[in-house]
Image (cartoon, rainbow, N blue to C red; front, side, top):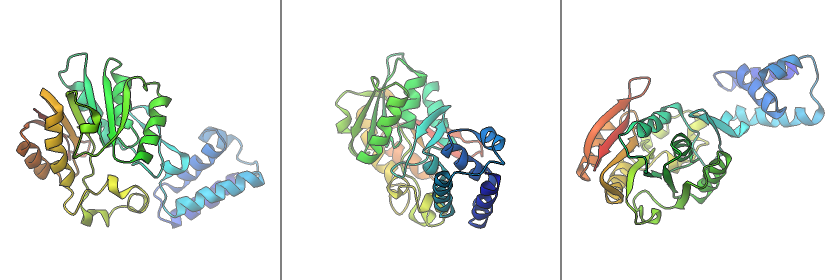
Length: 279
């Protein structure tokens, strides 16, 4: 078993994976339904032929820079485990700031939230777990993504308070005629020229339509802002995630739709990451 991990780590290092030994251990631990300690404890033991073949296939996929999260089938977000696959973006730590921002807003207990572009459902599910009195509508244009979101909603027992709806961020009418107190979104914000420079894990494997809205990277904000304005009750909040160079364009689009910008919160690298606006 130790030699299998050593060989896998060498191959992953040659492929440019940043933490090759750690990832090799994670893959084998996941395959054996144990943790790192379990793998280390059985270090001298050989792998069975079937396990060795499956491990080889996983290592080969990681060599091609398929995201580790897709190979193990999940990622942690806000302390919760979420199923992920090639139909959804891998949840990222920066997006946890979006959830933290929404739960910090001055809201009444009986709140309706619309999560636009829900993907894996990580934002919608985390909000429903953190705020059991809230009702959340999770909207996405991809039926495949909604299948993943449904699995996550059910996994965390919030299916009674999270409604999954197929629809586009430029037209929120499928979410219903009832006005929302919060519209929240991690929209696509990567410009076309940025996308070509992304890490292979992102550029070659994550769904491009969830990353790139158009040439400038600002197209989603321009579509979302007026649709969100129409969907919000007076005084309602729009909370959006920003890309590293999105703030000026997002601010212009959101202000033009009639919102007042309340605050922009930075991430742990001091990059403007979350914009709060109010109707």
